[in-house]
Length: 208
Image 1: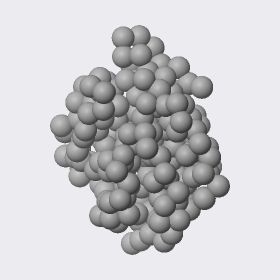
Image 2: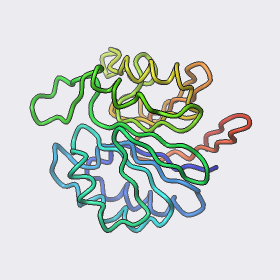
Image 3: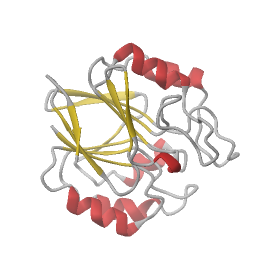
Image 4: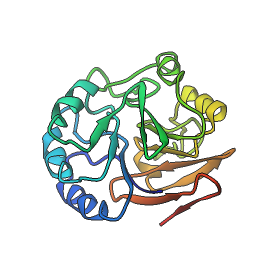
């Protein structure tokens, strides 16, 4: 399975147009949140991304709510918005949880959740699938510009327990496009340019 993974467009229309082109020839597109800037301009990128006809999985970032994301994608037929729930594509399980986890230092505008709240939303995540989250697992691809880890303990615990083949996240801009393994799970902080991952559920994962 070929997956086009991205995050943190923040209203970047040029990046959105590039992703539409890259979506040709992949099996699934994954958007790991922050399509808007502090709840503004959500449609600027989603109107472009809605040209993608490939099955697409989206989660909200901390810059837009799940309700706003679902409203903005209501006419995008190939897109599924996940937040504390999942779906199946070609027999593969996908689970999604969006928002800033744990609560960010950005103030009232940020769409955030505590690790305790995230634990509840992650509880039913299937094993060995694909986990889509806006925030990274703690101490993975989550170092900010001052080298401080900003990820989520709840997400890390979920990854260790459920061992998804792939975890797609974003949120921490300084670690965009970085990836690492956490036991048997590949963790990708996708970023806005788009990263194509190939998953063979019987063997290994490769990035392109």
